[in-house]
Length: 250
Ligand code: 6PG
Image 1 (cartoon, rainbow, N blue to C red):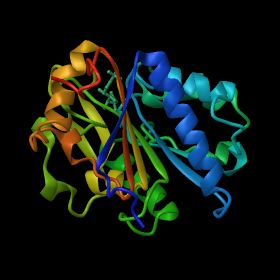
Image 2: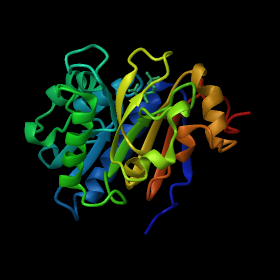
Image 3: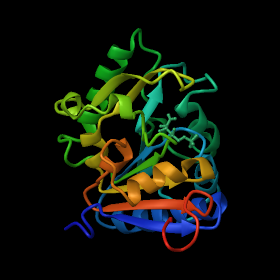
Image 4: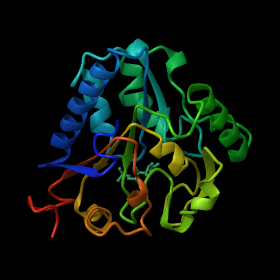
């Protein structure tokens, strides 16, 4: 039964360290509760720079202990670069988390950007997801997400927000607007992201303030992050710079 039907719950924190710690503790509590009644826990990781501190904290055991042998890691999106490329989302999480914890390699499911084309990688990752989730309406236990200053999340940009294109797809190849450093991207579609039971959106920094206001206060439908509506909890971990004051932005 959905606790709040994906209505945003905002966790206002002083800074990135505090929001990362809050997210780690909440995630640890959810993992502990969920694994009392289910064998495995599925967590989709976010890209960009904001989640790095959260990954470091999880690796250090904040919020734990974690049953790493029962946790499966996925990615919500990826840049179409090799996994050893500094721009790779898999590289960030591998360095800060995956290589720091006793998680079986078979539990880690990066988007296969080594494949000969982005389309092939999207097709393969779709198969991977379908092996774990028979239906898009019930996917990850938790999906971690970030927010771009233009309101994008994962690799769903205002310019590529095409709900029809998402209708039958699990993973899409996207050409990001040229302002982004890597333009060929792969992203789970909104139905797959929203098939998660919980979404945790991590937002830090003044440059995110306008986008965050657009999503949380104005529910601007042109902003992809406005459409993040998981099955149960939609948690926004925001720092003071991104959302000043306790009035929830002004
Ligand atoms: C990516 C992410 C993207 C990211 C936002 C925020 O691949 O870049 O999926 O959606 O979360 O752009 O990025 P920062 O955390 O670096 O601000």
